[in-house]
Image (cartoon, rainbow, N blue to C red; front, side):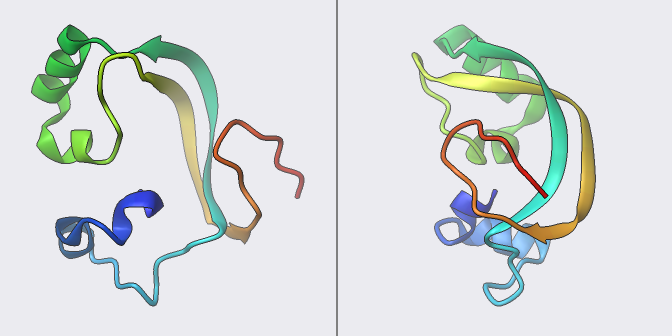
Amino acid sequence: MVLFIGRCAWIRTEYGFESNDTPFGKVLAIAELVDCVEMSNERIAAWKDLYGDNEIAFGHFEPGRYAWILSNVRRIEPVPAKGRQQLWEWEK
């Protein structure tokens, strides 16, 4: 979501984020990665039907890309962290 805050005004409006209170550079949740699936036109259409346009707008869904399937997602108090654009080990 943070990736799109600056580009999609409807996200800020819909979810009440202001640029000065968006928690950039912080871990907001932890989860278990249970699968990684390749996107196809059929899968994208099915997910759009299931989750709607707004949910699809949060990702970069196009054939050949991959999506992470998460479970046990738990929100935590924001904790400063330097992340990566990939899987990485977070050490508190």
